[in-house]
Amino acid sequence: FNETATTEIYTNAESSAASDVYKRQPPLLLAITLMAVWAGSAVAQLPLLPDEVERVDVIAIERDGRELYGFDALTGGRARVRLEIGETVLLQRSRGRVGLVLTDKRALGVASGTSWLEVRWRIHEEPAQVALVEERLALTVTSWRALAFTSRGWVEEPLTPSEVVATMRAGSGVGLVTTNRRLLGVGPSSGFVSEKLRLREVLESVTTQDTIISLRTDLRILIFSAPRASWREEKLRLQ
Image 1 (spheres, one colour):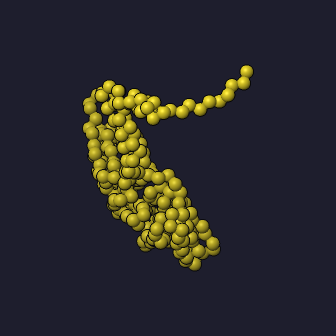
Image 2 (tube, helix red, strand yellow):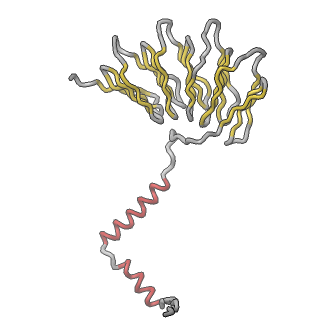
Image 3 (cartoon, helix red, strand yellow):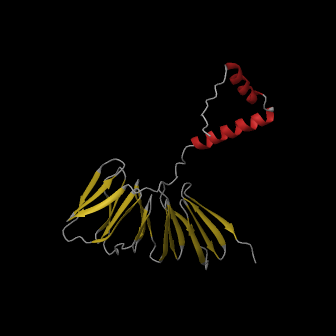
């Protein structure tokens, strides 16, 4: 059998009657429906948090002889710096919005919308040779100081002669340097924030997330928040 497709046409009266179905909804059910619609719209329109991390690589570093280039996908710009005669590149890395180059003479950082910014090694300072580069910051250490590079430039924290760096950790928008005496947290919008370790306190674990780092020692739980640039502690209960 062949069925002929039909088109249903509603008269104005029938259309009005159909719309009355919504009018006859119980008040409570109608209110719940409207609230659900409004809530969905509100969630969709919530602005991004200021410190929300966008995992998109927008900086690329290329080298041509002694020329270093930093290409910026966001602005379409190009930053250029020339290496000195005899200067040796030890590390070259980019991720997210930052790029880092370590040489035997200096540290060079570039970010979206910036030119190359440098920190020179001091006399008798052992150059940094390792670094962590994440979406919003780069982290490295020398024999004398801890260094972090963000879109705002370089920040540093001097190390005392008796301090020995133990570990470095970094998340998308947070960094951590631990020594035998203290913990140094840093974020894209702050300098290093120090938290002293207690006498004979032992660091047991470190957990790094996008903008927060949690540490556990044999005495405390310590939390560093990059957006707030602050430490918080909770004492462990005695077993």
